[in-house]
Image (cartoon, rainbow, N blue to C red; front, side, top):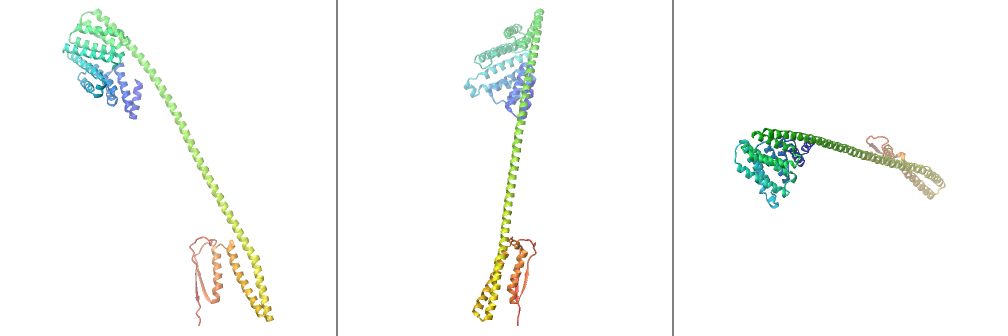
Length: 435
């Protein structure tokens, strides 16, 4: 019982309607049949009925609700159960399946309702009660034979009918008929020694019957049997409680084991997730390190190549300046000396040729000077470029008596002339006015 009461809130929290219906039905069944507390069983059974999707289980739930109304002696409340049975009796699916449980339960409920009204009011039609009794009993026997009801519970159903019939008969003063029903019920229970609660009720009714007949010895005898049955029922309840406690302990152990297993699996899962996260971080760090090293190597290679190119340019500029420049200077000097000697000797053709050689050698020296300046890496600054431009402009324009003005944005002296800068250099010349 405690197990179901502990599990029910969990199903409610998960909004599991099937679980709620199943557990509520079990709780109601325990309250009705084991604890004999129908008032506590009704809320659980009503909840189970409202959530149960299976019509087969709805039958059992409505039957237990009807038992609660019978124990509480509420015949008017049984009208709802009879309406349900009547609706199910005409259901097409059940008609096709030839399911006669609705008729069986309806006959049983009609008999209980008639008997309870006779017990409550102390008057009624005994013939109607007898008719309802035999109809209900015949339908129960037919249902048991057709496996519509549990065969093991058939004696319990018969004893229940007999006890209800006996109570109604005794309440209306038909002591002999009521006594015969009780004796028959007692005979049925002798074959089923485990129903101590029902036996206690029968012995109580028999004791009241013999007290009405003024037979004190038999009344005392049945009262003793009632006490024995009550002790056996208490003992059975204790055993049931012990079994329930053991079942609860086993269930708690299973739950605890399951929680421990779940905790271990969760820790393992978290550890696996953590390992994957660490591996991912390590992979990202290694990838970033590889990219960084690759970038450094590429940059180092580029710097090395630039340095090699700069060294090559410096070597070329030195070689050009030293070798070719000195050779051209020598040619220019020698041609000038030879030209002067030819002029002294009066050889004008040779002097003209030597003068051309001197001019061309000087022009070649100027061109070589431009090549050496452009190859020299030390000249790759904006300042050197501006100085070179001024020298060129001066050499070209000063022979024509022109005025020179140059403007440029101030930049860092080491700025490369090869980079794209916003640099402006304007040159203007104005020829002097001559008269």
